Image (cartoon, rainbow, N blue to C red; front, side):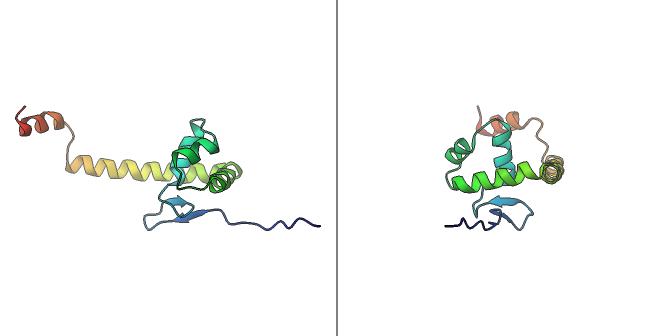
Length: 108
């Protein structure tokens, strides 16, 4: 009996905003990588995000470990884009004094 070894696609799909999602879920690649970088095992990650199949966690982590430069570039570009969005939002809605404004509205 011979073992058939067929390549399987990496369970990542790109959404309309350019984010990579894992296994058809809403869980992002950034989320899985952050958990793994914290030291969480694939089993821990699966427990935290049960919508992601354990096999998909392993497949995505394998992909990331084999392509660290590409994944790092993607994560960096997402962080930069996120910082730009945050800066635009904070410019439009300054966070300074937010607590005081909320407390005054509640009359506390």
